[in-house]
Length: 283
Image (tube, rainbow, N blue to C red; front, side, top):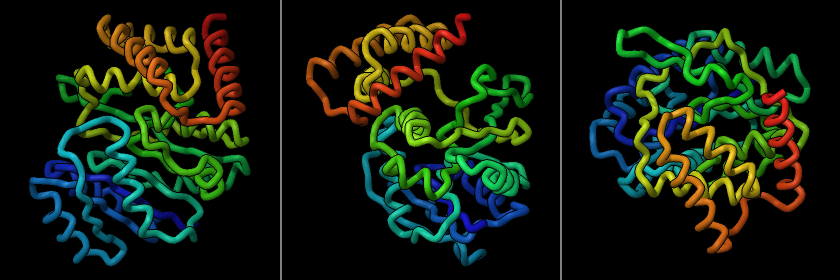
């Protein structure tokens, strides 16, 4: 299978080389690797340049953007900047963060999954992060039906059907919801243990928390599903403030009548799917 990778990198001098070495060590190599240098102020660009000389499949794309790290919009903008330099002659496209180390057979397994299921849409393994004792532990072990945004693979047909990635917080949830709306499957393989070198921070600032609630409104969750999802996040991270900030973000988005990310019909499907999953976990 032909596949392309877009790596989004903002000040990733500590991790980027490991990520690229893991990609170049794959048992099934990509046809193209676009590394987007997203306004880095450290040695990220120098590392990219070193690798472009090492392997002709690697290309650099420089992008100017805000220095602020805001979940959602910034990384999707970087991915889109790289995607514009690619053609559509791929079987699957990969969005990869620059702090990820993949097992050597990762994409060979992804290709096998695609070949085994005609409805394959979004695919991936599972993230492992180091604890204080240096042991690699599975992150978010309860959700086996979600692929982390840091290492998502999309089949060509699925990526086109969902209209690409949404420039918003929650993009890596709405993509899976829209994939299912369009009849595609989310496939995961728990044998694919992905090392996430820089664990997600627990302290998104207040604006980012508001954006989480805003995304729920824009995905047409409705108030009750948003309330349940916000409560779940707050409990999971043991942070009551996260719950209240997320709901506040939802309410502000509703008051401003912000544009939705999905159509009415897609929203109806999303709410049915969400309620189905909520009741399945309760009973």
